[in-house]
Length: 311
Image (cartoon, rainbow, N blue to C red):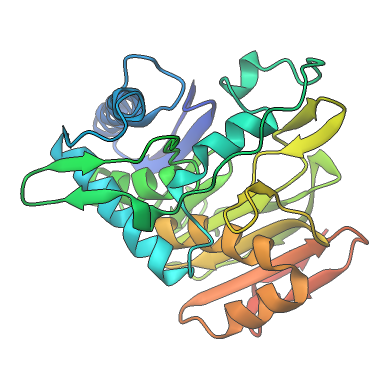
């Protein structure tokens, strides 16, 4: 079997993967993945004015009939909101806009000189009415939903359903958040780099995971960032403050069995700071984490170090 690779741009990031499979079948799989990601973006992008999410955000205080896909991701968001005690919450959209993240990142003027916006009235997912029987969602006035906190993990878990009937040997990355299983064409572990948050073109370590399926997600404050009204901002908004997270953490890498959980839990740990975040990680099942602090200290959950080889 050959390893078939694919790489393209979507969701504001680079999508890439490798699949150890028959070439014709793997090429069909790559086409299905591209189509599914395009469908996901058309439903849930905050930046596409024609998306279902944009329509929902533009119609507050109304019971809006939505697609089954919207109900499904809203229920996933509610589950994550509960598991993280509200630290991953899709109602942060207005805070993202206020901070400066008001268009897709590649179009962003990161130093626009605009005046600081009025303070945002914070909402939580508790304020959103999700009626799965009637397929309706109602958001309150002044609320903008954004699924950046769970979106990549959510779609990665769904894409596994396309991949695993074809092969158990694969990896698929959405902007660095990935699922990985099995081995490569030389029967070696797929190489998984851990990025240096202060030099994003360099890896500081490599993850060596068992051959069954794993999810890896990294969240950090040094990539999607800018300046607005003379104030530095980044895209990781702490729902409890409505402001970009400010503590000693530069990045968090999480290993978990679900991409959705890895994606959400990396942010949850980051929002808590290195000490409380790692203590929280150690209380979770099937979760390991590495925190890199602003002093280049490495803080590990109980079993994470055994998976790491530092370069």
